[in-house]
Each structure stands twice: as C-alpha cells, then as structure tokens.
Image 1: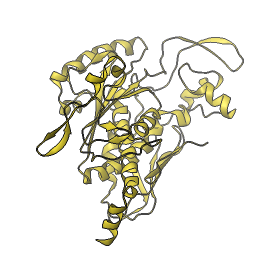
Image 2 (image 1 turned 45 degrees about the vertical axis):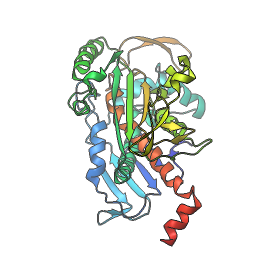
Image 3 (image 1 turned 135 degrees about the vertical axis):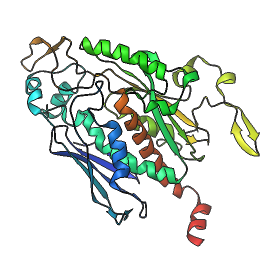
Image 4 (image 1 turned 90 degrees about the horizontal axis):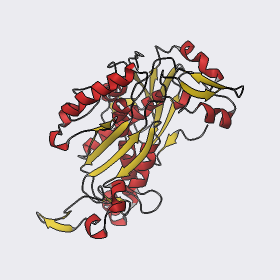
Length: 366
C-alpha cells in the first residue's frame, strides 16, 4: 500500500490500523538539538483523543505516546524519530457485521475494489485514528516553527451551518467548549443542534479555519511544490476533508481584479499589503502576511439512521451503523489541520535553505 509518506526533507510515514495493536509514525529529517519530550507530543494528542465529550465517540483511549528512537537526554539526535501509541480499547466485534456490506460514505467499497480485501474493523487505515501519527509528528513540526516565531491556530468556523461571528471572536474560548469554536454563542447553538441530530441518529459536518502568523516571505516553490498546493494536498489528505480554499477562496470567482488584488504599501519602512485576499501566498510563495485557509469536512458517515446500501452478494439492503462513532468529526480534526499545516511548512522551510547561493555561502563561511 503506497501513499503513507508525506514530505521531502522533513518526511513522515504513518502506520497502523484503528483496531490493530498500535499506531504510530516515523519522522525522518528532524534536525539534531531540538528539545523534545513525550509531553510535548502528548499535549497535542490529548486534543484529538476520543471520549472527551458526549459529542465524540465514546471509545475511551488514553492515546499515550512513547518515543522509541531519535531522542536522547531530552534532545533530538538527528536520527529517525519513531513514535507509537498502543490501542487499548478496541472492540472489533462491534464491526463484524459490516464485513458483508458496504457502508455509505465509507471507503469499504473502494478498498475491496482496489485490494480485493479490507480490514473492516473500524475502517483500518481509513479510520480517523490514522491521524494519531500525523498529530504526533505535527507536534514536533510545531515546536520547530515556534522556535522561528511562527504560530498556527485552527478552530471550527462553522458546524452544521452555524457559523461564528467574528465580532465575538475569542481564541481562548475555543478550548472552553466541546466544538473548538472561538465564539461561545455559536458553540451554544451548535450544542443544541448537535444534541438534536445525535438523538435522531444523524451527524454534522463543518468548516475549519486556520491562521498562520509569522511566516517569513519566500517559503514555497514556484511550480508543483507551491505552498498553497502543498497545504491543499496536506489538508485534503485528511480522511473527512472534502474542500479547501485559501484567502478569499471561491469568492474570488465573483470579484474583479481591481478589488481582488492586494495593493502594496510601505508601513514602518517595510513593504506590506493593504488587504489579504490572497491569504498570505503569491505565486506559490509566502508573502509575509498571515496565511489563512479553510477546509470543509463532511458529516460523519457512520450514523444509526437507516440507510440504503448493498452487500457483497449484490443485494440491496437497509443498514443502521452500530459501534462507537463521532456524531461530528470537526472538533477533533482541528488539531489535525494544525499538524498537517505545520508539516507542510517545515518541509518547505527546510527546502528553502537551498534557494540562494549567497545564503549557502553565508551559512558555511560564517
């Protein structure tokens, strides 16, 4: 199975299944000398782990990370870093029924068509638990970015059609409600709707917005490895993500050049932009302003409401999905978005070290 590796210089490979013995990640290309301990990673894993509210799957997992290699006396050694999280509360019997049919909205059908075989226990590699490796690696990438003064913050902008009011925006509020929304009023409205849909056996989707501050200009390549292209690939690789936009996104299709273009000006002796419709990226490279993008996440496909599908005997049947599932994935996906954004940025920042001869000479001569 190809496709489990991401990055060119700062490279990660995730492994493991939802109901296997463990999940994890191997990170290659991390520089030596980065201060790192398990807690740095655990803090991020705690933000995505299940069982934290009635609006997430009731599966209880500590998701406790262990560092197997690449760290000595509290610092990275420059060798590959291997991280593991053991599954402790898997109940594979909950999923035995679905081995015979294809769940709507899931990868069951496509896995069978591609491989002629699938791990039906919780979705295998298509499960949301695959993101454990991404978040663990992303925590390390975020530490690298923090040392450069770069800050990444994602949050739920919209859930079930209920959007935040930017007049009420408070990032601290994000961590005070189960929906990761930086607007307490919107979070209260979502809680009412989510409770209603949960009782009906249905689910909700939403939009996650991400702001990246402090990125130096010139990060990203000009053709296939554009910063926005790499971000799009990274975010769209998250299982439930179905849409991506940066800056004004799809809104630019109805704008004019005179209103969409970000005018340049001088402020405090530095070149800046008067607006940020481009979302912080021009020509595939960061322009020094905030990078802002949004990702659309579909409603959780595992619902107890009756749905039509077919079984492996080519019979049309009705199903009600059993097991422990999130009624909405958006809140737990917020930290995954941060992780994938961080991984993309670090890889391109490291690549950028080779962009200019004068910088190479300066580095090695001085």
